[in-house]
Length: 353
Image (cartoon, rainbow, N blue to C red; front, side, top):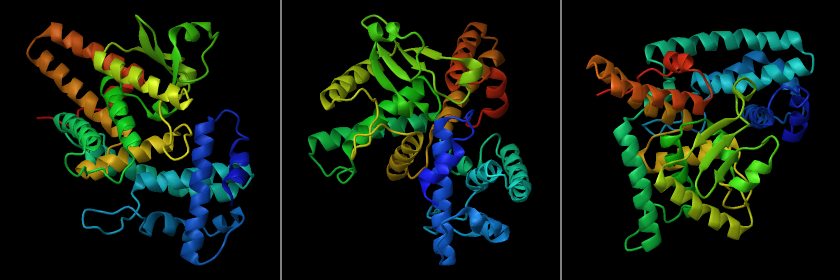
């Protein structure tokens, strides 16, 4: 089952975003290869999915390549299990194998219930997030550690922790982390492109995601994201001087490289996709602080800090501060692409002092 053939099938559902179709094709083609290796067979078609019990056993019970604290291969967590089952169901529905799809759907509902129970137990965190959650202060310390690693790499007075890593990826993460701290969002930052304010104004309707840099005004413009049909284009003004300076320096570098992409793959120069952002984020957080820190967990840590400050202001009858922190929470909800009601329901305070 090659990825392109699968992608052609997934693209039959026109309402689904290209990024989701691509993720589904990648997941299912990878699953077919891993399951074939496990069974010591080669699968060129979808028919291996008829072995529902074997496939589910592999997805849910066979250890993957992720290591636990003891260095042992981990059993896939419920979120990973769902991530592998979803494309199976979608694929089978598109090729009209509805009865088989229903078998997987029944199992998916059971795992969904497990995830819901874990969420309730862990105060809005998945099992993996519960294992990797850190405080807001530790998140800031991690950002500072990234800065120090870059300095040590550039000056080389001592052996850097990243001598064998790609420095461009780390500098990309330096920018990305500041973006997430100030404008927490989803993985769509992977597809950001630089554009001048003058050129942006010429667009009748922006179709891509942009970092818009002007002389007096700069902002982030997000058009392609999960809830775009409901919320439309997301605009977030950039006022942080340090972030603006980093972006202007990075734009000059990208211009010299002949690209307008904010983030690119070091080896190929191709623009990041969402999964590239996830992989690079977790690669460096694992290396530097032995934690898997992704965009969703960063968001939960950041809004937990703002939520804690808001609650403390209310508790102390400090309504001026409460209004300020509520405005921050409102801005974060908008940047993430959901309502404050959803924010309060699913992203409760997860880190407190």
